[in-house]
Amino acid sequence: MALALVLIPALGAAAALLYRDNHRRPWLLVAVAVLHLALTVAVLFGAIPAPDTAWLWLDPPGRLVLGLVSVLFLASAIYAVGYLRYRAERNNAVFVAALSALLTALTIAVLSRHLGVMWVAVELAALVSAPLIYFNRNKRSIEATWKYLLVGSVGVAIALLGTFFIAYAAVHGGAEPSLRLDDLATTAPTLSRPWLRAGFVLVLVGYGTKMGLAPMHTWKPDAYGEAPGLAGALFAGGVTSAAFLAILRVLRVCNAAGEGAYASSLLLGLGLFSMAIAGALLIGQRDVKRMLAYSSVEHMGILAIGVSLGGVGTFGAMLHLLANGLTKGVLFLSAANLHRGYQSRFTTDVSGALRGMPVSATLFLLGFFAITGAPPFGPFVSELTIARAAFLGDQPLTGALFLLFLLVVFIGMGQTVLKLCFGDGPGPTTTWRDRVATTAPIFALLALVLMLGTLIPEPLSALLHENVTWLEVHP
Image (cartoon, rainbow, N blue to C red):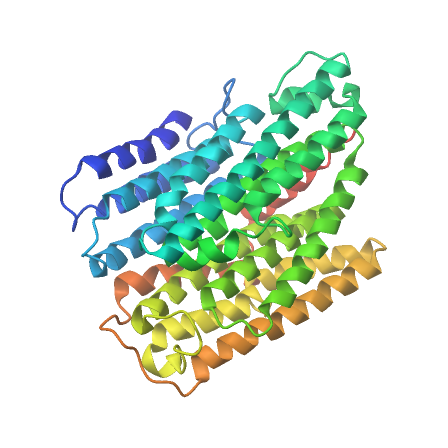
């Protein structure tokens, strides 16, 4: 079944390149998404055994990320049908194939139990994402694509070097050389501490680049700004989550080797720095998509802070992984509707959207309140849990800075969002309007975000607790 999870989107990508009907081709995405989600649900709820081979398995954080990616892809696939129908002047074969290939790469990254396989999958995700950014085929999109590829390639190269360092830590410590994650966790107490520390730094910088942690976030504003909204949703909720998963798996090895305090201090520092940089860049931001990119930088920082605190903080971080990914889907897809309707992503042109496009603007406004931690949405619960972990863990300065940066982000994003929704600008400049195909997926994602803020299902709560136990192993 693990092979089926990988093969379904891979075959979908091949079919997209072979199928000639430009109008019906996007429905291939829906078929792939439905089949992938059905298999994912069957695996997560035990109807089908989870993969456990020499190369593939499904650890607790992998279960969370697999479910998130599959749900996000289904919402984006349904949205793509309406979106690509509007963009009928463009051949969408490469775009549809790249989306399916991205799901393939992310699935491999989630299922991998080998650091080398995981690295290959993350690099593959970067390569197949490039056509998504270049879809509009203008000067800005090609510049964003090259920046994404260059910065991302440097990041994954550094991550590969870190992987080699971790492998050598086993050799230097006298253990059998292996890049299998369970082998590394088992032999962690014998690993060479200096080599392991250096390896974690490189892995954190490398995969942190793919996450978009500051100061390695420079590709995000351009890539998110130029890519279609449905691609932005998958980047912000899928690609970044897979990169975070890679860091978590190496962090577990560090914890098992007794180097958890060192690794956590690095995560805490980068997390706070990311929140601070994002807050500063959000003040006075007029570009809606860049605003969402900087918001993503902030929330990657929140994930790093939560995991660094451990215990309750880890629980909050894993919950935030889901809440942030789903909320980013709401924001990127509703922003895409507004962008299409007004032919602009700047608040100088998009203003008073609650009158011109009331459904999309309302969804965007609710998404803003959710992503900035307002109740009763999921990010409120996860961020409150992380703040509680900081204060209860005798780190009042961390807790105070965390709350301060959240306030700065709320003010910065609020200036942009309120002007977009309540300004006195003209109405939409195109024939694009709110339609079922391009709003129903957003409503579904918003409902899930609301559920996470009001009632966490018992199976999900148990899985979140299992994540805490899995990550915090001791030598």
